[in-house]
Length: 321
Ligand SMILES: NC(=O)c1ccc[n+]([C@@H]2O[C@H](COP(=O)([O-])OP(=O)(O)OC[C@H]3O[C@@H](n4cnc5c(N)ncnc54)[C@H](OP(=O)(O)O)[C@@H]3O)[C@@H](O)[C@H]2O)c1
Image: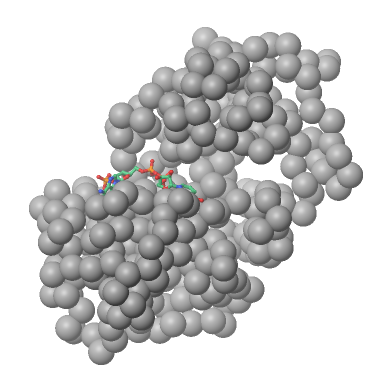
């Protein structure tokens, strides 16, 4: 067998379709061929189609937006051997698939060495602590936000204040959030005062905010929460603009480009142990039907903001319908 099924975007801002005659990619030096059992859907996947991002000079396009043979929305892909991790037996393929993109954004921004992150724990060392330092995670229920909360708990930040819908309170507290500010009750302009009401019980000032949404409104609110000298980490990778003595760190979370490769190797070495020991719990998942065909409807739901607190996961080996 030398061909496979793959989800293809045949032209910039064109339609997705599944093709059955795509070549199975061949591994380069130091690479593995991986049979893709589960592939998570991430917001960038619909943005690539809708906005025509990252498809200049590329005729065919899959989820891995750097090279087609490294994409996930196909039955076989290639990956560098130094960037894979064994899945602990207590988790399914779907749960494992929920981890890479969302975790990478969170851990690059928080733990990654400067300039890729704010350098809280560049060696992912269990001895590093920030005990009692307060932090706010805007978008605590996003997949990225859920990993950010867990990474902050590992460093013993406290309080960990999550801005999210209150329906997720119990789950976010199980991941390490100490306080939930309900985004249906407190609108973003009122977030700084809501945060202040929680902070006076601690002795520290708010020096770190993680924005897991990345809109102008969430960034404005995040800046307003910080003290002078504080740092806003945002998932909006094109954000710029320090203000009022506060700095912004825009995350570009990928282990597959040179800037993130060395930190990525550390991450994949430590990842099995972090998962095995429940430092990091995978996101809740919804399995999509119809193999690669199921991705298109799933991306539409993501685009319409219909996904709350979980990851959609496709199964490329399944029949198309
Ligand atoms: N820069 C990077 O490297 C990188 C990497 C990965 C992802 N990202 C970006 O990170 C963002 C999150 O990705 P994801 O996969 O984690 O998303 P996701 O889980 O699909 O996000 C859905 C969640 O967004 C929450 N949400 C929407 N608007 C909100 C707001 N104004 N305030 C608080 N929460 C809000 C909803 O919260 P409720 O359910 O609580 O209402 C919902 O649970 C996306 O913009 C994505 O493109 C960036």
